[in-house]
Amino acid sequence: MPPERTSRARPGPALGPLAHQPAETSSPPWWLQAPEIFERIHRRRPGSTWGGAYRLGDARLEIDSDDRAVAEDIREMFAECAVEESSDAGRMPRVRCTLRSQPDGEFAAVDLAADEPLDTLDMVGGLLEPRPLARCFVRPSPLAGWHLVGRKGASEPLMAVAPRRVLVRAADLARAPEAGPGFFRDLAAAAVLRVQSGVLFLHAASVCVAGAGVVLTGRGGSGKTTLALALASRGHGLLGDDLAALRQQSLELLPLRRTLHIRRGPRAALVEKALRERWVEMEARPASTPRALVQARELFSADPAAPSPLRAAFFLGAFRKRPALTRFAPSLAQLEALRHLPVRLQWGITPARRLLRFAQAARCFARVPCFQLDVGRPEETADLIERTVEEL
Image (cartoon, rainbow, N blue to C red; front, top):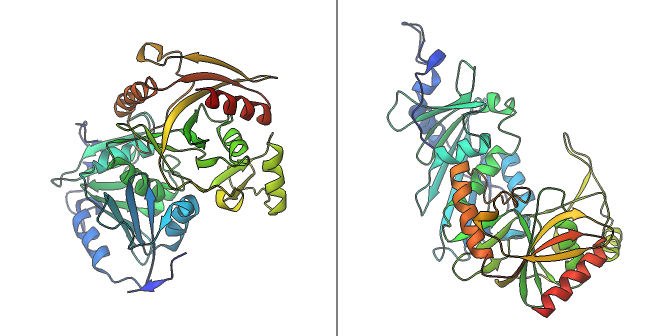
């Protein structure tokens, strides 16, 4: 932890209940004062701030927050991606996320300074719900350049959004199930992923097996983390267990290691041994199954720092007594067949953008051998993956 330091826009219907304010009030509603509130919050000098710098793919995320919990939430997820704040500065795209809060906690203001243009409204909409406008509304504000986002049926919006800026009614957001507890963390991550148009971010594990980059993708609970850890325990380089970064042009996998969330279930013997030797225990969290949170570098010796050329992709399917492989060539014509093997390409992604990214992923995978993999015991399945990669 760095030391403490001082210091989609779419047309919508009429605003409904938001438009029907009393003709005379003591002051305008907060969303009509959004620019002034935002500037007032950011002009205030915070007593303390917490920060950090992280390399996610081919870009840097820099955090400056007066809310310690937000900074620690980001560090907990991306601790293995942390870099020195001065390293690589100016040599790659970067996003600086500055979070400031009112002393009474009513509002939080996020400023996203990026080297590339960001569609902040599109990111916010994608974070709140996978299907746009199902539970939330996105409407133009009476103020030029601002939009309002909120829960359907609510009398007030949750937040006001402008280019680079998000003003959040913090107390209301905490009670909104659409937002989730990691909204600010995910907003920062979505921004840094968005500035990398040449990199695909896949819902997949990635491992460097004997110098060859391998992707393991499938729906949640299909065994991505289990197999990635089984391979890492044999000395292969773990690039990431849940989020893979792939350069589209060169087909190189980049290290992007999030903190491991290891659930109960079958594990390779070497993984079990490493967890036991380091006294890693399962912990229960609200609305979550028990899991162990641990850094991969604490378990395994191999620590890949260089990109690895993609040589094979494994699409995880059913669980079987014995693992089995079937080679196939992915294409858009197989979209329905692959629907149960979703590719989550970045936080805050809308359905239209997801379809575009799926097409890009299909083109990338068409350039390497792809296999449908039915998963058996972790050791046997890891053996099969190793043999298959060695024979390519």
